[in-house]
Image (cartoon, rainbow, N blue to C red; front, top):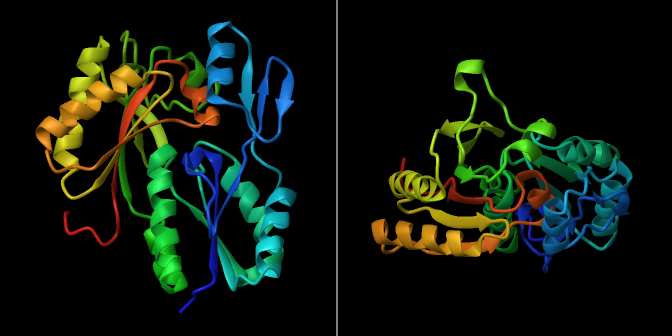
Length: 274
């Protein structure tokens, strides 16, 4: 048993630090000014709407090393570090490099997800650590199945950042309000909806199919009314569902842009559904 396992994640999880959980900030640069500890979502969205350049970067391996050493020196028996999909960010690789000197005392996990898909996995791992679960069980909880779909107003931030994968020209997204999917840790086209109402209906249908006995989160970037509308549509199909509605972190907002709305369905390894 490991009652003193510490959990580490990054701000792409949309989860705040708390007892047993440390959160590493992903740096942001707005109009040439660097914010190593991150910036507010409102500042990022306002900058993008004004046409200013917004960039993100991974933390340095040294920052992870310092965090891991602090936790181990403070009495943690080991550390499980759970991060945004390695297909979307270099954070996982930076964490691996930062953990190299600690051997088996630090395990780094690629969640294959982002936002609340990552957040649910982190909170599941934290809950397991708090009740003294084994390291194997804690890591297992960090690797639950996540189904995620989202719609953006503008594809440019995803395309210029190289985070949207279009497998072939025939599968390219040209619609006014495209539906996208997080699959295998990558963002790919998922549908050719043309309007926000169409995208919301499609996401509600997909969520209702996959969301039985699962945790559901509606994420948005300055689009709370649309997020609430999506939550209502899903609730109409899954009356017993517990749905979290929350704005994404500033780092994610920088990549999806103002107006993004999406849904994440997380199924833990202990779920009884297939």
